[in-house]
Length: 360
Image (tube, rainbow, N blue to C red; front, side):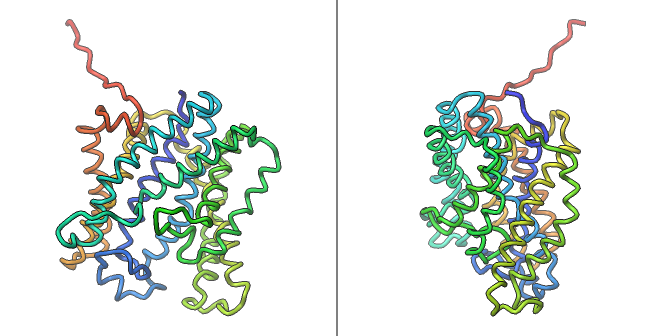
């Protein structure tokens, strides 16, 4: 199967940016759930904490972008391989890794999050960062059922999906973007929110909409949209909007969804501009990014705990984690994962290239 290089590279970049999001969480003042809080998070007012804005900018579009790209590539598999082969491929490369992670990565992540309580690895109450795989499986299942019933997702009316996320977004006010699922049972508002972006990706493929470079021209608009979203989302902290007014949450939902769409399409246009040619190292990192995404969280939290306990410089700690964790996992992928059954499970078979010896 031919790879669409710009979308392949964008998917890899988005997965690596998830590491950045998790790496800065211990410098955020809002969440009591995150362990290993650095003193910087408590001493710095949210309005003057730069990591609040970086987190908001990334969290506002990364996961919708994931589902949008997943919808596009799912539709591509559907068209080229048929519905049954597509479902089997998703079950193999998403379902089986999640099933394996439920007895390895997820309990380990829970153990690190809880600080090794009772010195044992206990069963968690949710999927942690791998909730994405669970929701993707559910959405692919719903999509497969709709395709089996005859829907082809080609009609122009499907573009009415664009404003649809405003409704579920209205009921989610924890952070910019969608809330993080809190358990194994799917939450309807979160499921509906990401289903829209998944179907948007399907629609792009089914209507053969090419990714255009000029889409990136919308990126300068996203920062004002993000600023307005933050003003309406945290009116009591910023003091510009009356939080008692009923239109405050409506404004927050509208500006957040506008920001998310503009950022998603803008990033697609940007990568069309900078990554449309095939590069072997980009393909390699793209393959490794799935492994990095699955494995990074326990290492990130462990490193954050060390930095917090030692009062390490917060900014240097953040940069070090962003570099060291993906670098370590990339090395492990190269030497012990890529050409093993784990690498095949994640990405399919990868051929080992051996040097050809010259007779001369």
